[in-house]
Length: 97
Image (tube, rainbow, N blue to C red):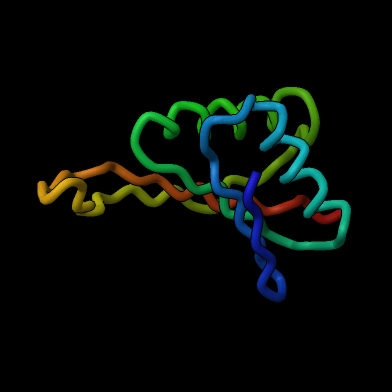
């Protein structure tokens, strides 16, 4: 599980671990007082990022605010060949209490 914190915003990079790991990472940032968390993923991990946000909204933070969803494409070079990989960034804000 990778996470970075820069001032008021943190980011969680979704990869191959179970969804609950990323849910816990986002909740940890919110409990530390971070105002917004970006959930980022590429390629086949995109569905896991969406699952993470939906689980957070359904079970843990009822009035979670999805501020923005950004999608894009990155060009990666592997073994001398270029490949396009889809990306997603979901910006979450903790509701004011």
